[in-house]
Picture 1: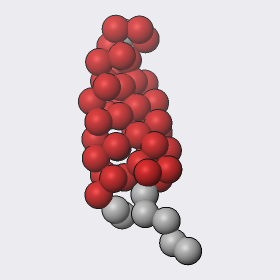
Picture 2: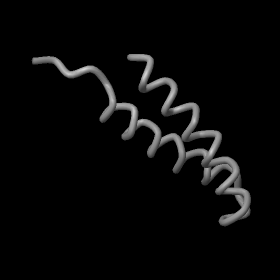
Picture 3: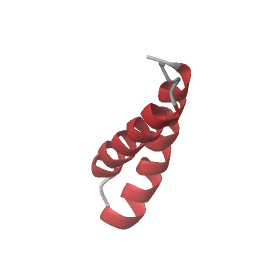
Picture 4: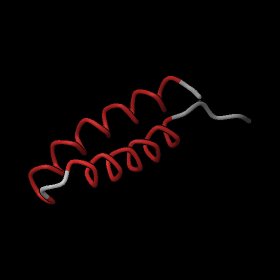
Length: 50
């Protein structure tokens, strides 16, 4: 895994924890959503192979 993917996953998880607690009143749901979104963003920012 590349560094962008790790960083985006960690930031997404942290943001998802906060949003999940505030919106869904369940940090576990927020962590899953944040991790998924972080993985998508990290994969999009990853190095391109040509």
